[in-house]
Image 1: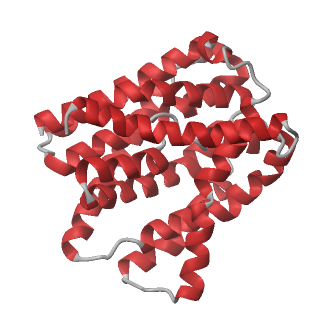
Image 2 (image 1 turned 30 degrees about the vertical axis):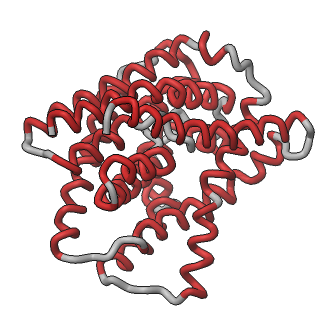
Image 3 (image 1 turned 180 degrees about the horizontal axis):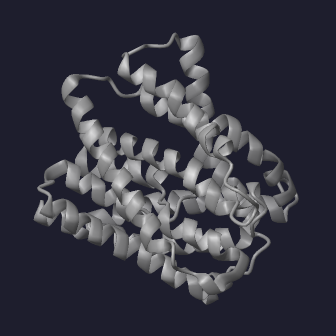
Length: 310
């Protein structure tokens, strides 16, 4: 694929997200589905739909010795990427007050599910989807442990029970044995899990749209922290990761898929976590939208670089 093909693929995914967000935005304006209703749906997304997404991602991969080893390698790559992100973002945004945790979360966590999976399919085929599914699992481990801790920062002592027992980790505890043992669930169980998981992106984007309906959209470009988040999330972290992986001998589809996962814009659950933990959903929505727009340019650069050197 050439650069402009990568760009069109990224544009297509961002455009689909934008349409879903626009529906939520206008539904709020028309009082059909308001921000208040969206926040009431937050626990449904958090406690039911998110675990279904994680379990379904394990159900879609057949375990063999070969792909199990590759899966483990990519799992380690994305885990190292998140640890690197933690170290880079930890000292940032000290002057942002209560919104500091939102910007740190936005700069570290990427949209590896909705943006990552289709792009991985487009640039690396089925093996890209396979690798990216490992990235989604790692993302959820870190989001539901370190991510929760970030959003709860200042609320008191570290509560290990909350960090270890939550929708993300429970989804992994259920899904991982299914993958390792190659267990096939009957359709009466697997189909409801699949249907619930499929609600994740549309519901999250509709909620996102209602939050945007109550924010200053032009403020997206005036919020100075957004530029720092974009620089870190879309350029510093992915380019540094691609360089390190290349030096470590990672090549081909694994390197290209890593570029997709590491270069993805801010995760669409940023606003969901903000709502769940009483943070400013407007700020979270603006930074997520801002990086999504810029990723139309930056993601193709990351993918093209990985494809060229790999």
